[in-house]
Length: 182
Ligand code: IMP
Ligand code: MG
Image 1 (cartoon, protein in one colour):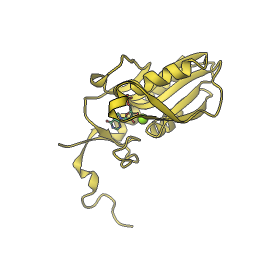
Image 2 (cartoon, rainbow, N blue to C red):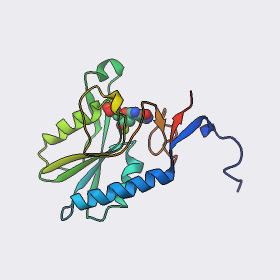
Image 3 (spheres, rainbow, N blue to C red):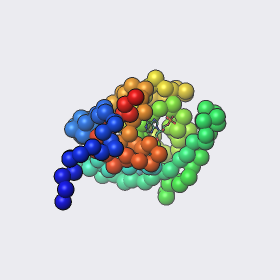
């Protein structure tokens, strides 16, 4: 096998914003808080496809409570209509969430439109409780008021990739979070 650290890779153009160690250590802290808050409960964690997949899988392996998982996929319409907050469900949950303790798991809150819509939509299905955990938050970019219940890191208004987040479907597999150098 060749040395995978040798030579320039296409990701050399991206500077590291959060290292793998920083991300993992923050997730350990968040998982401790969430495990404590949900003690005696069995929450349903809903990952928003596809970006939240890596965060969800690391988060649940650090939780010390029983839990179940499900996934939902959404797409916002193009820029013009995105500002109206119109979000389309591409893949819905497999189950009813009525009476359940639901925790939505997201990679990043940006304008807030996606989560604003999802919280509205899922609330109408009468969960017992409904909270949101996000790894990342870019509060400067909000178009609608939205405050996640748990947040890993506030980050500046830069486009980031890695740790589940993509640029044209690339880079999701990076273990750290990077920003495009411009
Ligand atoms: P919002 O509805 O504007 O809050 O959009 C959140 C979604 O936009 C996230 O789930 C991501 O899929 C995507 N997104 C926002 N900012 C970034 C970024 O910096 N990198 C990659 N995806 C992003
Ligand atoms: Mg997303």
